[in-house]
Image 1 (cartoon, rainbow, N blue to C red):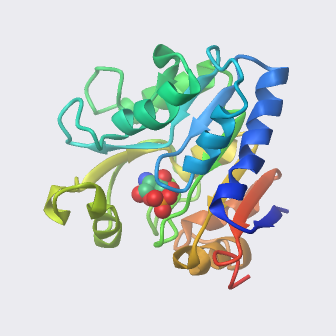
Image 2 (image 1 turned 30 degrees about the vertical axis):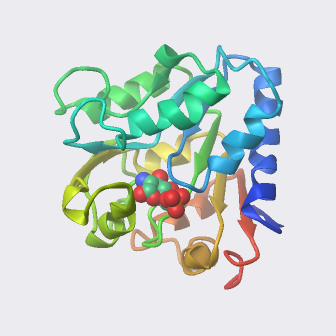
Length: 238
Ligand code: GLP
């Protein structure tokens, strides 16, 4: 059963996951975090930075990455994670991984990422946003509930939603590599964040709808330890 916390604003919402991460890292300085990109977790990173913790031993595994962007592209999730998480929080760059970043062929990259997460001892706390299509990571509707890290095709809706970060929707990659829903379920604690009215339908479907591949976020109902942090707009349909 998920614990649902309704907060007045995204700004205040960031303090809850930040406190959870701070408690984890205080107990386990080399904790393994699952990192999400997107605008939603930004207040979490800000609140965590404000705590001034030593996070230099923390290990990180990003949820997902575009396929096909040139190395160093500012909108690659490697660049975003470096800019928004690694640098402001003082994480050690070599300890933070993004799917497909091992310099080996894309074929097999998903399996290798799974092995690397396993070798790190598994993800202790996974931060999750949710897309308007209900996707978590880049697991679009139709993703197998047991899926592991693999290459996927983005929906047109997600490419349109993410076009704001690019010059045009045509510049948004068509493919991505993402942790699977099964990968996400293996994390020990899931923290799902959503702010704004645009997320209300996706949050209601994820938390109260049937568990279904049509609603990737609904897999959180299968996990024993989930914290959901939403503002009143995102909670409107609950
Ligand atoms: C992106 C990411 C997801 C993210 C979602 C929501 O496509 N791949 O990991 O949760 O969309 O993004 P935002 O938080 O900006 O609304």
